[in-house]
Length: 306
Image 1 (cartoon, one colour):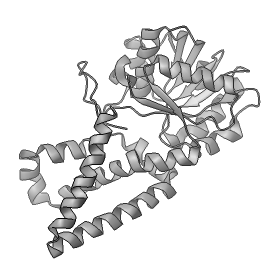
Image 2 (cartoon, rainbow, N blue to C red):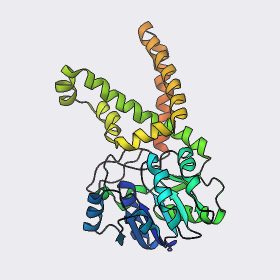
Image 3 (cartoon, helix red, strand yellow):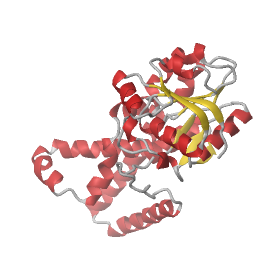
Image 4 (cartoon, one colour):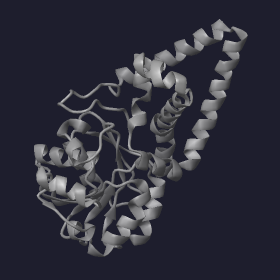
């Protein structure tokens, strides 16, 4: 791949940002990578492992001279970070993000964006339950989707960011912000909420949780609840900022669940069999589309989806 940017600045140095660094180096996508993290401890680790060419003590310092700035912070922090870096952005720079919600990010960032920069929100659909600068690896984005939400950005800035993410190994597509938030409420946000809830239910049954559930945890429970190990701050912000879409999908989920409860109560085996047959076919379609493939275990944690 050809170099797309002279300098890339990453604000927030967790799993996604650290994986971006290794991916950028693998493909030669940037001449220099600068980074900043709010926590002094995180910055110290990033320096220790040589994560970035320069780890800066302020976000404003990190973005100076960068032609691509990527915000890798929780959605709830986007507005404050944009307010800090706005005056330091280089004219003509592209600003992007990796947040799981898009409408709220656009609304938080817009008041602080200079007129002479391009804003192209993005969302890579990849991750693990791990966090921090040590958790990243270049292969994280391989054959995963990255959704871009140009929201009126200049076509060349958008095309350049497409090439950048493709260089990181991703397939790319574009969506409207509201459509993105609805789609992700179905494919990621609501499943995470349900997984957290299932763990909470098990915890309520303490006499079970303290022994049988942990000791005899079957693959179904382990696999289904694995994503409940994800970062609490990130998911708190996701649900608060994608409230309407998540509540809409939760309502639909509840209706489906009530229908299954009724079938079980009434002994309606035909309904259950038909339902499971139909949904199994949908699940197989996901596998055939290649979005259920685990990345190789590069000595790190197993991947979660979405």
